[in-house]
Image (tube, rainbow, N blue to C red):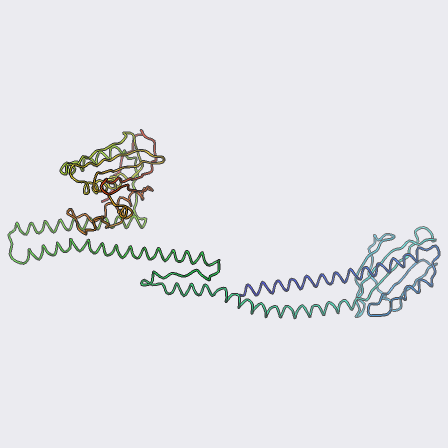
Length: 468
């Protein structure tokens, strides 16, 4: 409001000053035209072949009536003499030394309490020796001009004062009116709490400048609501997944302590407890890894990885498990295919997908790992002949703890973190994951990794990276 009032007053004041100087210049120009007209009349009289002194006396005494008196003094050679108006100012502004015949010069003069606008003109005389000049001095009383300018200044001061009052009132009203939507938004923001994340601000009736802000504010509430809901589900899932092995440990300990047991029975109980503890430790390590990736704290140890070599290692690792299930596990990859990646994390990402495919492929099925180059990278395809994934589940299978079968605990204690870890690892490498599937037709997982070197180059030694 202060800026608005200051700008309004500055504008009014600037306008008043400009009008004042325009008025003063206009009055000065008008006075100069009156002086010049009379000077030219006197010049015509002096240019006559015979100069009549009576005409000159009459001319210098003609404009003595009224508030704007005009005083004239004519100074010439002895044949013309000096003629001047009564009460003519004695002192006169000195003219420039380079004023030539026919030249003129305007000026200002202050005499006692009067102000004058002056004009000096040099006039060559006709019928006189060559070079004879007469000086015409004119002075117009401009005291009335000063009074007019004074009245104008008083009026301008009143206008500025009124403008100050009106601008304060208008500024207060405008600012208060325009800030009302912001107060509405502030009230709306104060209403948003954990239990009211579904509240939205209606953009209807708001200024156009604030509608985009309200839209983004509502989008922010959408993201907060989704994040809070995801966090709530995540907390519920973690609690549920941790509760199952903890209950097993507690139940095994209670059974073992209920009565005296043989050493073999205690050993079996301890082995079962150790197995559950390892399961818990693996889950906690996976959750910590996901948390580090999401918070930007995970680091990569990138090396030049031979894709064919890594896929063959993964096939060899799962070969025995695949053979037990009568599943055909194969690899298709070019020998000279390289990517820049963290070797351990790369292997873990692919292994998680292969493990998931083994769990959902029936006996006699097949799983293929295929790597092909694409513009700017390499895509790893893991295809199986399992039961497939329904369309409504495909967008969520990479979420933590998500299972298509809705079962909390499966036969092999899968908790639903493998695909989430795979997605985090691929995105940590600036890649992306995707899935193509339909019920009963198997599933194909696509892991897109960027490439950074040409095929055929010898890889550098791979450092050992710790990841679980």
